[in-house]
Image (cartoon, rainbow, N blue to C red; front, top):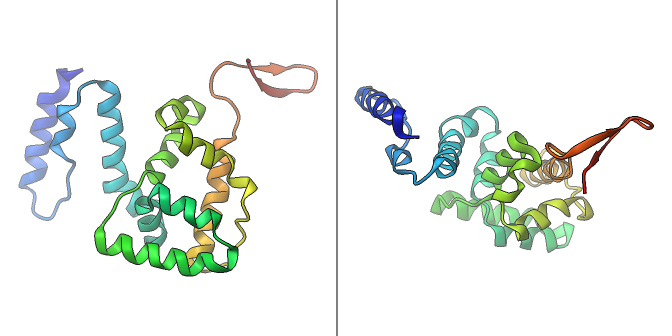
Length: 179
């Protein structure tokens, strides 16, 4: 696994010498195994690329920072209280620069499908799989509305077609999991 690490160190040194260039964390090369390396790599991709290119500013900050507790509290709150609650979370996240698990979990599922489910704790996956049961309707054009829309999409991704151990029923042409 470490055969390319010397080359990565040279790249990092070169990036460090370029003024104003944001570069990846050299600590990635201290990974204990390939899984640890790829998870740290994903975190750096989120920080350096995905937040800037894939997300409207405030929504990206929120999804990247919201804690598991805050997400659960928001989901259980009455719809009429969610916008105020989310605004307070957003202010807290901006002040503290906190990082939660939702963004990383989203990219694991988006890029790895159900092959990545084992990397996400069971209690969080249960929340994600049950998002469709929550009333996620919110005012359009608000951060609260964008967040609700994101969660709706994420919930559907978490219940997507299988990535491994499936078969195609040739009678009705449906994809089914092997149980």
